[in-house]
Image (cartoon, rainbow, N blue to C red; front, side):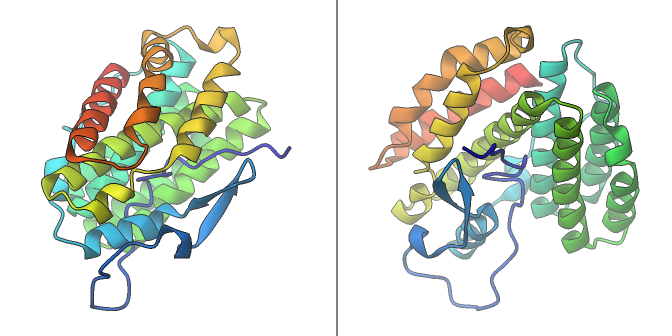
Length: 262
């Protein structure tokens, strides 16, 4: 079986390239999306999922943002740093959606700081400069591309250093922050079509398996221990039908876990 891993943007890190057509779809056909293969499971590409979400309404992306620190506090444990790095990159995409140039620049610098803490700063140094420059110019397409590239470069560097599981933890941090943002947006104006975007049991299964296989030395942070303990609660919440109550429950759970990461 091939080794598979998500970018930190899976479910929110490529937070939205708008569709070319002007008329929003009446329904969401998940099966029609471009997809990626993860452990032999077909997963819709997040860019397309969030493109549909934007077309269904007018999401209040600024309200979905978390406060961004000017200087991120670096955790002691590498696994915690990896979780925070993934969540920070995901926050970058949310800031792009909110078109908050100041937050984007802070996040770019924080990504570099966290990457340095786990020895992969060379993979993102150039991209950090591009993020800051593009944010000053409000070139959001370029900023999205650089955040996506930074995510891929960071995890590829970790894999080359033999830290595949740490790369998966980066992805997990991004998925949790992205899902928190997704549920915030869906909860703003609940529709069955929007809620259907949360029905991604294959992703939950993927991360549940990765958590079970983690090397014990990586389970040394309180944040990761809490995620391992609470993550099984996710499955029943993302099974259809996904009601407003389930959306609220997923948001509460991911918000609690992201708070533990931050």
